[in-house]
Structures are given as C-alpha cells and as structure tokens.
Image (cartoon, rainbow, N blue to C red; front, side, top):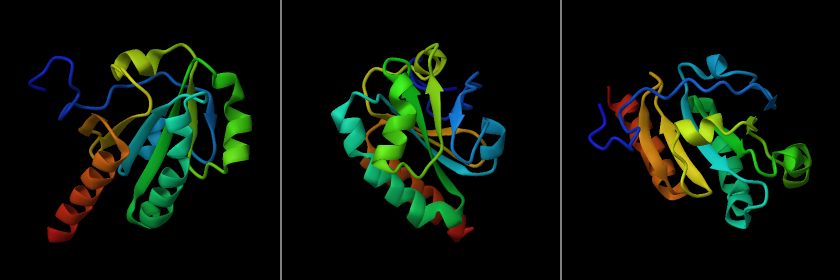
Length: 147
C-alpha cells in the first residue's frame, strides 16, 4: 500500500473506463507486459504540447524494449485531440478522458502529469515531471538487464 493516501506509488494502476482511443492501441489490455509512460495532458496546455517531441523520442528510442508512451487527454479541450495529434505528429497512442474518470482516479493536480507503470501493472512513478518519468523507465530497464 502507498504510504501517502494520495499517492498511487507501488499500487496497481487503476482500471480506467476510457474508450475513445486514437492510434495503434485500443485498450489497456494491449499494454499488459509493457512499461507504460503515461502523460496526462491538455490540448490547450503549452508545456504539455512542448513535451510531445520528448514523448515521441522516448517512444522511438525505447519502443523496441517494450516501452510505450500513452497520452491521456484531459476532458477540457479533448474535442481538438485528433487535430492536435495530426498537427504535432504524435507517434504514440492517445485516449480521451471526456468524463474525467482518469483525472479523478490518478489524482491529477497539474498538466502535464506523468506516471510510469511497470510490466506487472504497478505504478513506479506517480505525478512526476517528464525527466523523472524517463529516469524511472531507465532504472526499470537497467534492473531487467541486471537480472
């Protein structure tokens, strides 16, 4: 159990009832067994949009090692997600959070907000910045190589 009731760290990633997927992944079931970098973002958030190239790079560099970036778009502004994905060249799967189910379950307080889920579905980084999420992923991969 997480030490802090607000934290999801070391807990199973919550089951999120999200259905409006864009891209090659159409459900959380398809992400089982992968390391997932979740980027909770908003289409109107400039710092969020500025991280798209970093997410694309992470996916390109580590995708062959079983790492997937998943963008979860906040309900506010979600109607523009297909246009933003096309204009910005987003190369990772996206899902819309129109009913704020993910925002509530993940206890999102700011955008962008990152999480890392290990191959067993456990949260290993909770509400962190991109650099912290990337470092967590590198640590998980290094631990796998050491086994």
